Image (tube, rainbow, N blue to C red; front, side, top):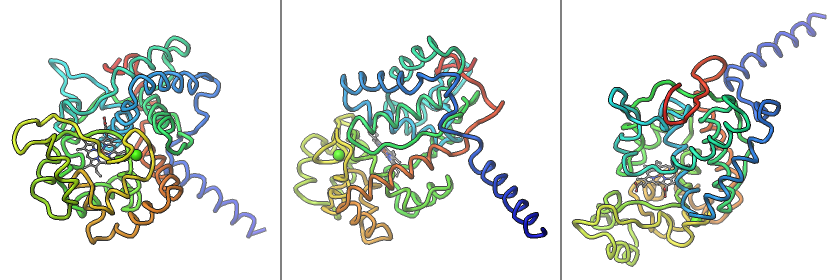
Length: 316
Ligand code: HEM
Ligand SMILES: [Ca+2]
């Protein structure tokens, strides 16, 4: 008798804990209120990626920059106005993050069938997953039920991880979001797709020594010592439109483009994991998917907090 009561008490405590940790997100959140949601998002992302493969990369980065600033609450989607300073013009985002028009298109289509029901934050989470899958990456089940912020934080966005940071700083920024060094190294594999601007890797290709010299020469050709700040280079050398483990092969060959990439393989704590991922795409794919779910759970607004924005660019 006593032990049955005891078990019930323990189970109750455990379920309460599970609720508070996961703040009520659930994969079937819109199952009855917007059953076609995932199809609408998938079709729109298929069109967008067919038009420009890079959009899959841009969406992934948009989601990362949303989730790391006060959680995955679509704060990054809010436009600046005369009286409102949001995140779009914070230095890591300005002239850099992209994909807003695709989110607008999806939101319009979702509103047409499920008026005032689905948050912009959830649309971004689904579009990101679909972009990765469309470029050949792993899939995962997206927890849903996030609501949209009515505020944004330019100062927190200015504090996003920098491409000039060292390993300790990067590790502590991920740790502050509840993500381990392993999560960080797996998530950095997002740089298997997409492009970066010359101004963000110039010091690496001209001044650093832990870099393959042929690679440095190749990259310097389109990124002069002065000028050409916005010239683009692929973050990964072989397949920057394909979501695979080539990013880690680059790091092992000292062909990381950003300083913040190469610190993951520079005689430090992440070397062994980088080597594992470079030899084992399945290990990378499964760790990446798990870390994306973790990142997508960073302090969501749920219940009656926040709102379901009508237009992702402005609060209601
Ligand atoms: C570890 C800390 C990170 C730093 C310092 C960093 C930094 C950067 C920088 C500087 C760029 C180029 C931006 C530009 O040229 O304007 C970039 C691009 C990109 N980042 Fe990261 N990043 C980090 C982590 C991540 C994570 C966790 C993800 C996703 C899981 C991610 C996904 C991407 C993608 C996909 C692009 C290419 C975007 C495009 O082509 O539009 N990054 N990142
Ligand atoms: Ca790739």
